Amino acid sequence: MSSDGAWLPVLTEKGVTVAPLQSANCGFYCEWSEHLQTKFAGSPLKDVAFSFTFEDGQVVTKKGECIVTQDGMEGSLIYAFSKYLRDGINHSGQSSLLMDLLPLQSEEQVIKKLRHIKPKESFSKYLKRTLNITGVKTALLHESFPKDAFQTPETLARCLKAMPVHFYKTKPIDEVISSAGGVCESSVNDMLMLKAMPGVFCAGEMLDWEAPTGGYLLTACFATGHWAAQGVNKFLT
Ligand SMILES: Cc1cc2nc3c(=O)[nH]c(=O)nc-3n(C[C@H](O)[C@H](O)[C@H](O)COP(=O)(O)OP(=O)(O)OC[C@H]3O[C@@H](n4cnc5c(N)ncnc54)[C@H](O)[C@@H]3O)c2cc1C
Image (cartoon, rainbow, N blue to C red; front, side, top):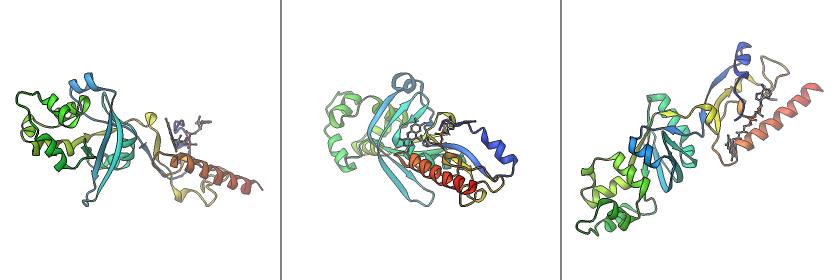
C-alpha cells in the first residue's frame, strides 16, 4: 500500500461512506522485557505454530515462522492472524495467541524426552539436549512463565506447547502490507463508480475488503482495477 489515504476526506465530504482504514497483514506490538529486546530483537522463530481462540471456543491453528522484533512480532505467521488479533484489540484492547514451540511433536512425545534428566545440568543445556530448544525460544519461555512452571516434565511440556503471547496494538498503517476498510460497497454502483460522484471510479485497496497475503491482495487489486476500467469505458461511451 503506497497510497497515503489523502482521498478519504475528499470522498467523505461528498457523502461517500468509507469504513475506517486500519492496518491489515501487519505486525503487532508486545511488551517484551529489556533482556528480550536487547538480546533477541530480530530473531526468527522457525517451525512454530500459533492458535487463536474465538469467543465461541472455535480454535484456528497455523504453522509457520515469524520474527521477534524489539517491540513485538512481525512476519507471515503473524500476518495470517492479523485480522483476528486486530479485531480482538479493537474489542477489548488486547489480543492473545498460544504459541506451540514444538508443533511437530505431541505433548506426550515432549514429556518423554524431557524425562531424560541429568543431575546438575543447567536448564538451558537440558532444553537444548532434549528438545533442541535454544536462543529466543528459551528466552520466550522465561519471559512467559515463572520458574516453578518448569519443575516437572509435564508442566514444562505444557509451557512449551501452549505459551501465551499478548498483543496490544497493531503496527501503524504506513508500515503494513495492506489496509482494511475503505469505500463501502453501498457507495459504488455495479461498475465501481461512486454513486455520489459520477465519473469517479474506485479500485484496489480503496474499496472496503481485506485478504491474506500470498497473491490474494494483488489479484483482488488487479481484478477490481480491470472491473473499474471496464466501467470507465462504458461510462465514456
Ligand atoms: C512490502 C509489501 C509486500 C507485499 N507483498 C504482497 C504479496 O506478496 N502478494 C500480494 O498479493 N500483495 C502483496 N502486497 C500488497 C499489495 O502490494 C497491495 O495490496 C496492492 O499493491 C494495493 O494496490 P492498490 O492499487 O490498491 O494501491 P497501491 O499499490 O498503493 O497503489 C496506489 C498508487 O496510487 C499512487 N498515488 C497515491 N496518491 C496519489 C495521488 N494523490 N495522485 C496520484 N497517484 C497517487 C501511489 O503512488 C501508488 O502508485 C504487499 C505490500 C507490501 C507493502
